[in-house]
Amino acid sequence: MDIGAIVEIARQTTYAMTPLVLAAIGEIVTEKAGVVNIGLEGIMLLSAFIAVYVAEVTGNPWLGLAAGTVLGAFIGVIHSMISNYLKGDQIISGLGVNLLALGLVPFGIEAVWHVRGYHTVPPEAKVPALPLLRISPVFLLTVLIAVATHYMLNNTGYGRKIRAVGENPEAADVVGVNVELVQTVATVYGAALAGLAGAFLSIDWLSSITKELSAGRGFIALALVNFANWNPLLALAGGALFGITWTAAEWLKIIPEIKAVVPISLLNTLPYIATLVVVAGFIGVSRPPAHIGRPYKRE
Image 1 (spheres, rainbow, N blue to C red):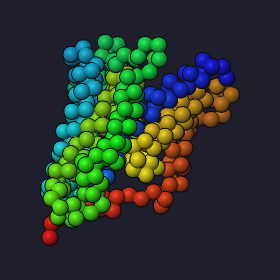
Image 2 (tube, rainbow, N blue to C red):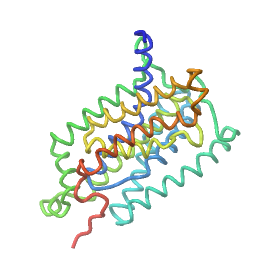
Image 3 (cartoon, rainbow, N blue to C red):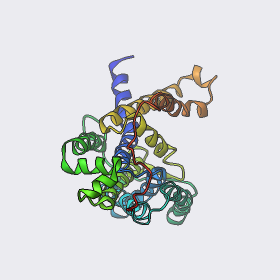
Image 4 (cartoon, rainbow, N blue to C red):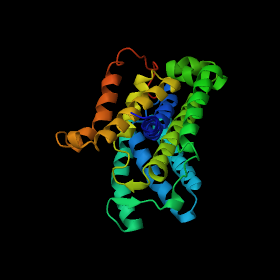
């Protein structure tokens, strides 16, 4: 394999890993505060849709990325209100977001662009790649977010509050920490990153919006949280694993000898299988926050 092929594989890997890493980092912060958001899949799909719409209307892809991020944050506010203040079931709330996206996005595609299931993003609405490197600026932003989030969780006072709320909200409450507020900020942050991930999918990497654009990436991101042991830097490694296997599967599809014996639909499952096999090896080894998934109720 020549150097050009290696560079191209690395470039494609950065695109494939970016949405997973963004969503996983956000969910790590959310779960560190004791809240679970399984609605990442729905957030990514809804944000992908609004990003395309805004980018096309304004002719500015950066506004599209911003719109997707803001929509994700807004959904995070709703999920937080249900989970942290109304003390509702966090799983049902996240499931509701996923179901909403499954119905609303196909309807929106047909209502806005008058096509069923698929719309291609025009060039002017697509985020431009960095010159020379030919990678997305969102990938570099993702690496910065991973480093900054890791530092925030482990080296700042607010990070200690997040971890305290996720481990022992009763003790945090006693010393004056506003448990619900900390959980809300963490939830909104996580949902905002999932929104950015969805916007990246539609107006950057894949340049389209479809009713199945997220393709299970929200659920893979949830699995990567466990793989990373709630460490944002390790989430980069998990995302790279998925990215490399996704790129390998795409390259295998163009080899005639392999196409003749292996169905393309089976090749499409390779990155998911590889990721889940590796993640399964960490189940029971990694340790989640002690109070995760349970609304805090004062006695």
